[in-house]
Length: 114
Length: 115
Image 1 (cartoon, rainbow over the protein chains, first blue to last red):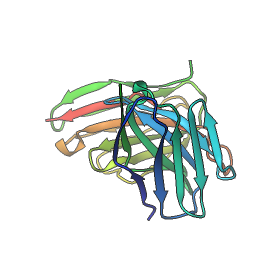
Image 2: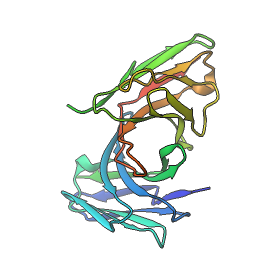
Image 3: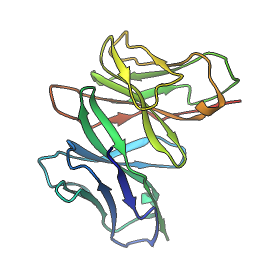
Image 4: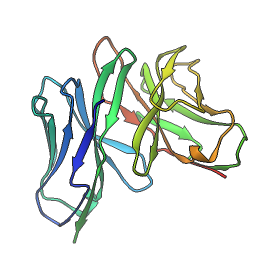
């Protein structure tokens, strides 16, 4: 069974820091990987989707990489801001007979302080 | 605006009283699914639908039903809710073409409390 772990579970940094969030998975037979942010009590906002044929994807201050052979993805956030405070979730796209199922990681709770 | 909507956003009900949570998307997506999110357990898939009239169980389907009569709508039905179904529920949708996976879009969530 695919297990997805995110380290650290929680992180507090001062504003302006560059930071890296990690996502590890046990089975490399994934299709794509998607990063989300979730604000307290709110829905999931899609940040980046990395296709399995890609190694990285960028959007603004965010950069995500994917290394299927090592079972690892990282989300890099440049010049962090208080508005980046949220829980970050990675999700693996697993193609099954039932289509495109997401298996979620455990999440990293980020707090960016002034 | 492309979006997934859910109603209601908050619901408090009593054990055994049937309820329906609606989900609608305006992106003409084939694939729709329901997840529940619980502390310490993360997000788990309840049911999914590949297209109209095609639905199947996810990881935690017990106590839930779904239907997909129209492409845009995918309601979640709790015939006889129990307190262990107290949770935060999310609906999601994406394209589903061939053997590819696409970005999934989530609704704002429905917080359900069953007393």
